Image (cartoon, rainbow, N blue to C red; front, side, top):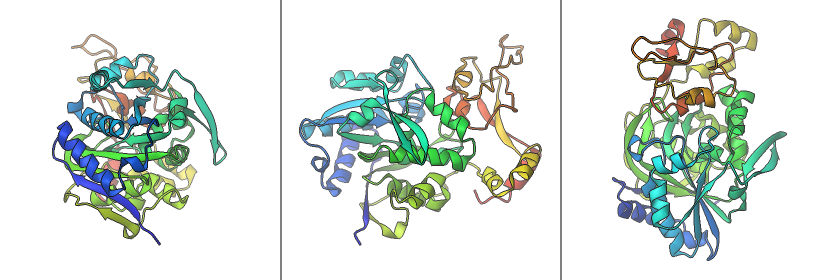
Amino acid sequence: MEKTIVSVAKCQSYSVEEVQQAIRTCLDSLGGLKTYVNPGDVVLLKPNLLQASTPEEYITTHPAMVEAVINLVGDVGGIPRVGDSPGAFERDMKKYWDGTGLTDVCERLDVELVNFETPGNYHKVRNGQDYYIAKPVLDADLVINLPKIKTHSLTLFTCAIKNLYGTVPGFIKTEYHKQAPQPSKFSEKVVDIYALNPHCLHIVDGVVGMEGYGPSAGDPCELGMILAGNDGVALDSYITHLLGRDPLEIPTNRIAYEQGLGEADIEKIEILGEAPVIENFKWPPNVSYTLELIPEPLARGLMKFWYTRPAIDPKKCNQCKRCQESCPTNALKKPGQITEDQKAYIPEFDYGDCINCLCCMEMCPQKAIYHDKSLLYRFTSMFSTS
């Protein structure tokens, strides 16, 4: 049986020249970009634009990755476009394009930036669930998925599979969080959306990733690589293996593999190229996953004393209200405390409504939201393998 191929190349900087050469090396191992793109094809580049963050914060796909892929698509006669839907509904996408450096890239190269919030969407059904995918995504001849390697405090890991969650426009994304507050249930929705985006080539920004409390509040981590493949499950599985984790411990990997959407068995993945050695990568704690093995009534009682939940550091909060806008259950709409130094109100959590989806943490530009851990949680965390 033929093995699934993942291609990898070392890349130590975000010089466009070095990035483009590394991507070209990866694609040549897969038969070249011309294998995927015919002249005149519309090719949608889908980066990770979680926030309107600068490239130096390493939260979003670096603009050098986007510029390099635009050049390569143009070389084979494709028509590149760039689009995404950020972590919460946003009417003014310009601040995302500007902040992440993509306005400069696309204006210089005369490439269209596509706002997923305005052109409408297609209704899809998978596993009995309703989903909505932005029209520019499914109308494209090919989607080049450009994720960044990052940890994720809810799903543990975000890369090729999770990045396609951004093909869902606007507030619909937060509604899915509300429908599936448990990590495994939410991961099922992420995998459904991945499956509804079948025509993808994945090129991974692994030059500088994020470890710790990702996807936005973690720490930059130099990984020094770019990867490519047409199987996002295999890519995510191989990367998590490189980072020292069993791929099937990542719920999105496991669920996608069980559904036959890709390969997660490392022995069945052929690696072309040389990957760097990565040691002591820091993962977020995942003690909360044990709650899914406990009967629901007992788990609810235990949660009164055993929890990790979002909280706000008033010294970092600047009252931008991004946390309130992104919360799918309106758990941050209550009037909050007033600080002496800032003379302003800080949002306050209603933990009765909070589903611990951590959308607030993802969207906070000040990294003001942190994990508040109970004494019992901290005690049990000492025995966690995470």
